[in-house]
Image 1 (tube, rainbow over the protein chains, first blue to last red):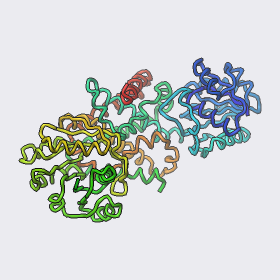
Image 2 (spheres, chains in turn purple, blue):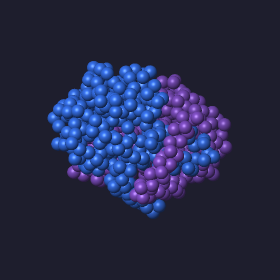
Image 3 (cartoon, rainbow over the protein chains, first blue to last red):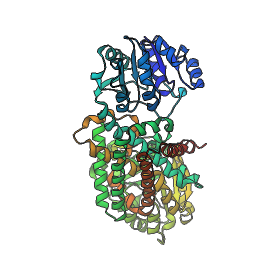
Image 4 (cartoon, chains in turn green, blue):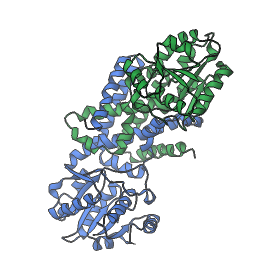
Amino acid sequence: MKAAIVGCGLIGGSMAIDLRKAGWLTHCIGVDKNAKHLSSALAYKWIDETSDLENAVRQSDVILLAVPVKAIKTMLPGILGLVNDEQVVIDLGSTKHHICTAVKDHPRRKQFVAAHPIAGTENTGPSAAFSGLYTGKINIICDRRDTGLHAIDIAASMFRALQMKTIFMESEAHDRHIAYVSHLSHISSFMLGQTVLDIEQDERSIFNMAGSGFQSTVRLAMSSPEMWTPIFEANQQHVSRALGEYISHLQHFKKCLDEGDTQGMQEMMIKANEIRRVLKGN
Amino acid sequence: MKAAIVGCGLIGGSMAIDLRKAGWLTHCIGVDKNAKHLSSALAYKWIDETSDLENAVRQSDVILLAVPVKAIKTMLPGILGLVNDEQVVIDLGSTKHHICTAVKDHPRRKQFVAAHPIAGTENTGPSAAFSGLYTGKINIICDRRDTGLHAIDIAASMFRALQMKTIFMESEAHDRHIAYVSHLSHISSFMLGQTVLDIEQDERSIFNMAGSGFQSTVRLAMSSPEMWTPIFEANQQHVSRALGEYISHLQHFKKCLDEGDTQGMQEMMIKANEIRRVLKGN
């Protein structure tokens, strides 16, 4: 399969590496507005050549969009305007409803697959890409009924080649759920990082005291603001609700703490412990 | 060295395992109010025998307190009342000021070492103990001036045997700092877990969507409420302030989100990104 990868960073690069390994991808054209990313991708040999967007789209069986979600939404209608009957466009963005809405009535809608592979790290750029990022992870395809069989088949074979399990979901439900299990945890981590940095100031020594627990909780605070700002913007309504509920829980906990209501605190923590059962799927 | 370990769970057990391995600990008496923990510890062979507290204290060179902080504070004066001139008592609790205050004027204060090895996991009980928990981690000894040289020497040799690096700090400063880099991250994680569970309800499928980011951020929500309630209670003042600042940051972020102030959001995240530099010590 010949593919164009638009966005040669962690997401696009890790995909190219393993699709090549699996033999699914035989020729890859890289597109990126950052020339350094393109030369890195060439040096790493995930891409065979670089090109401008239009030329890359015209030459490829599959076009993968691995850029921030706002850019996906902006460029998608134009890209679909360039493709012939056989070509397939797959986006990999973390929000889906606004993207699906933007091309809902596009004459080439059937050739578009709205996907969200649930995988990533706090690192960005081509040097962050690695083999195995997607292995064993979940992929979500949204609004499947709007995609044609041919495009679904191509996308399914691609995510199978990455050893991912694909599930299907409405784009609206996707955005509502992902606000809680991904977007909220990023905000909680970003703000934890900022809170601790704010009081740190002249007391750098306190970071000697940071154990593995803090590092695990604050890891996502290292994520890319350029990537996450458009995600939060695109999913504003659901993220705002999730964040509001999170703040309410924290305020309730603080009230228990300040009033010496140890039983109240303990009950909240016991309830939170349930996450172990849920995440282990028991 | 002959030691009594009071509390045969993750903390006490992991310590016994590696102190034996290092040859520092030659005989170990286990004390625990939970009989199952004692029989597990015997079966795992970290302890050689079990005993009641008083008998264990009388027979040991070193008494290690690895129980919840409220229990440490309650039992410490009595334990110091039992020891002779040569014996050393070391507590391993996560809050230090209230414990140090409780024995400030105790005639045996010089034989007590207030320690906090910065290590742990979200798991509890003897089955959670493992070799290597402490290796390469930081240990904090508080209010060193109140401890005699003999006791400091014994404690220093013990933490060296565990391959830990010991730093010294006032107990009040310890509690203030640890509120941010440990206690706050536990609350942020507990409440993230509870928020997501609350909206989950009949939608268990959303946990299919939880990626490694969510799992990393919510990991501490699996921690023991029995252990953490007394910690938050003991460090109420500092934890409340840290939590208040965290809530303020989240509210500010929510305001930017709701007002479409993407630049404001992005600036907060860029600032939070600094945590990478700080944690990597650059």
